[in-house]
Image (cartoon, rainbow, N blue to C red):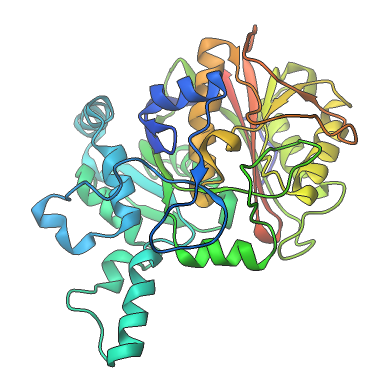
Length: 398
């Protein structure tokens, strides 16, 4: 995207999230700053792969409102859990009163949507020749289902969009919201995303030999791959003052390889440089990088090279928070946005979780213990399959 300055910082007015670390932004921050992982050895009764997963507590418990029953799937249950936060509901209601329901967009990211319901439906059809009673692909698995479900839940009538660019999905939504608001299409937006644990994802990463049998350890010398998590998170954003906002963002598509990043992180470099340019900041202004940090050998090596190229070797503190939540795939962007925004607001750097021995081949300064900081600007990276990259700069309000 063009590296022009944002006219007004995209202010974060409210946020809500559920992840393996628990329910709410507070629970996520507490786990991140303490380095306390929500990952557990896999005990899912529908998947027997030897791995660690980040399942959201209580995801099988919530009952959707009666009028939303046709939308029921694991992905929407995650979203429903997050959207029950009273403070977030109040903030959206206030924005709806200020602007009108038709002037608030819903822009969300997902990758597999409600495929967790479609997988057993196909198995049933293969065995019996018919779909299960009540199976509704349009309301559960279609790529736009999440945005329509959340708009209906929140009573919003503005434009809808679903971004599906793998692991960068719910980071890119912030920049789409910024463009719509700047163009006068809407006055505010609910942005975020949701992705749930499912057989397709777990077996897919296992087939790529990227799924670790141990808990993931980003940037560790003995890292062996990713741990998959699930999450849902949402933020209400407006071009209005806020304690923290998105001051810049950059996107790139390097198309180096379908599943392997460029060895020097050329696409990642381009996204980070574009984010800095749009925010009007120099590399030295960034006080912390929340890395994509998946704990695969190639990804961590590529990202470390990219960060060193943009900021200088070991010149900026860096952490990966995926050791807390697991890799939440299309929801990773918003989960890490919540952590990054909180770090800026509280001026504290969370550690890179599960680290045992820093890989000496990676020229980055890893945060190993939480520490106070004069943090005013932080950068969060999310890189998707095929080189769909996004970097966001979060800045303290004036």
